Amino acid sequence: MKIFVKVRPKAGENKIEKIDNLSYKICVSEEPKNGKANLAVIKLLSDYFKVSSKDIKLVSGFSSRNKIFEIKEDEG
Image 1 (cartoon, rainbow, N blue to C red):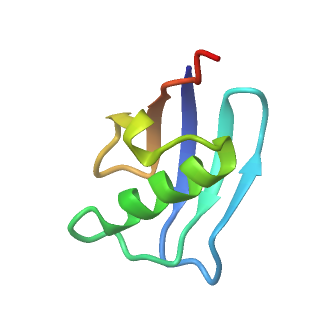
Image 2 (image 1 turned 135 degrees about the vertical axis):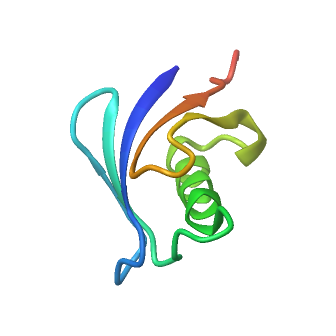
Image 3 (image 1 turned 90 degrees about the horizontal axis):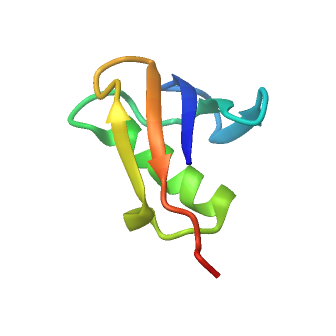
């Protein structure tokens, strides 16, 4: 499954807001340097979708606020 994410780095808190079935707004407290914000987003997504962080891949938007993630869904 691919999802579209708008990221707000250096936010006061970490949270996920679902916009629709495939779009999310994610706030993370990490700053966007050396991939720290991206790692924080992956951690939040893994908790939200209850999958391992290894099952989440950043497909597009490494240095942009608009990102596309691919989430490997549980086959069971």
